[in-house]
Amino acid sequence: MTGARTVRAPRGPTRTARSWSTEAALRMLRNNLDPEVAERPEDLVVYGGSGRAARDWASFDALVAELTGLAEDETLLVQSGKPVGVLRTHEWAPRVLIANSNLVGDWANWPEFRRLDALGLMMYGQMTAGSWIYIGTQGILQGTYETFAAVAEQRFGGSLAGTLTATAGLGGMGGAQPLAITMNGGAALVVECDPERAHRRVRHGYLDEVADDLDDAVRRAVAAKDARRARSVAVLGNAAEVLPELLRRGVPADVVTDQTSAHDPLAYLPRGIALADWADRARRDPEDFTARARESMAEHVEAMVGYLDAGAEVFDYGNALRGEALTGGCARAFDYPGFVPAYIRPLFCAGKGPFRWAALSGDPADIAATDRAVLEMFGDDDHLARWIRLAGEKVSFQGLPARICWLGYGERARAGQRFNEMVAAGEVAAPLVLGRDHLDCGSVASPYRETEAMADGSDAVADWPMLNALVNTASGATWVSLHHGGGVGMGRSLHAGQVTVADGTDLAARKLDRVLTNDPATGVLRHADAGYQRARQVARDGGLRVPL
Ligand code: NAD
Image (cartoon, rainbow, N blue to C red):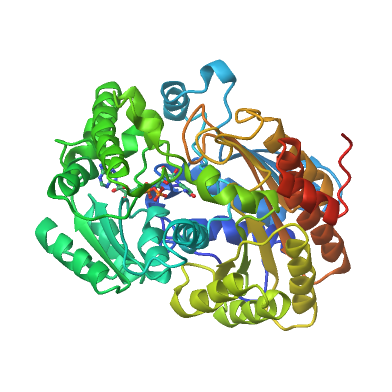
């Protein structure tokens, strides 16, 4: 059967697939398309502009059928969201190998990708959309929380209380911004052009309120800043118009960033085009639309640079806005840094990154149990403990209950062992899946984001994500993916993912130990190789062998 329909992951301890490894893939594929999780499930779009879980509904049905029947010594191959073959492998091999959106260098651009997409030959996998480990906006929440915590630490004495952050974009990822800012004590003013997106964030508890108009929004946001109150306010409008207007009015923003879908010019609404005409205009004349979007992005970034000149903390939030604005004519677009070199790289050096897990039972009590286990294991880390407690209170689950928590080299393997023991002991009602974002320490080459301004200039070296995918395949991950273009768009990134199932068996314990040790190890090695002393220290302390 083809055609749009409502998809949800099955819950509970009974499976329809032949093993928990394949049941897990089946549930996580379906979970990515749960209407609570996906931004546009009817088009199979999960998040991040056009990031899909499967190429089309026929491919989705075939994936479900193949995963249901797959044996424990078989591996399903997925090429850009379409199942293309099943091969005989062995029990340590991944059950699914996924390659999404990869193009040969000279062809790695949006027009060529779109040509192939229109012919039905490819799909855009983003990062966790096409690799079936997207867990809703929470997935990005901790990364965003960590980033704003680092901003607070570096600039504002450890808290955002008394500061105002101006940003834009309330989509799947960007929607985490207001809550991450208020969790750090700050006030937020967020520009979003699509009312439905803004109201959805209020419904999910990520945003406090949507203002009536710009005057109202400024009044409420500045009042919160002045009262040192944690409060988030959205204003409906186009960021390319609103941000310059905020600057002109002298609205006192202390932090300025952006998370519109700028990585894809067709997913950024240019000034002068109505929301209702967006899809039609982009489809009818993508070249003209792209040129207009880039012009608008240039104006948007001009205003961000204006705030930089006025002394605000300004950073790019990993959506390639600067690159597009430069093409659109903003010469000073790269005057402000990306968030990874500014705040996140020291974490990557320690193998830290967006580790996450989901409860296949569908029971929130299972995540509460894992939260308690994390606090028992790592409770002496105040920052981490604060996150787990706040997440337990404030994060409403979308789809299968899940948790994200940035853990480093050594820590992830410990968590994996403990979680597998919990499954074995019946402390949780069904197996858990353990995975991560592709935005991790060793799994991505992305010169505008994760590997911007590497100490040795190796920003564009893409051998590392390939090694990462191969290492996880060799270590026993349940599914492994290798993608192109996630986060920052075509031609700008290569990245890999892994997900491993904790089903309580001894075999799973051994696989989890290997994968959750080796996966973050590639991040430590990558940063040690680039010359970061902290990574070299972590490698020495962790007994990692580094030949040169
Ligand atoms: P999304 O497509 O779900 O949401 C983008 C939002 O921006 C939409 O709600 C859209 O209406 C809004 N928008 C577009 N143009 C606008 C304009 N001119 N003015 C105001 N609002 C506008 O995308 P997402 O999943 O939220 O991701 C946002 C961006 O962040 C993407 O480029 C993505 O690649 C990037 N990203 C960053 C990180 C990170 O860690 N920093 C991680 C993942 C993704």
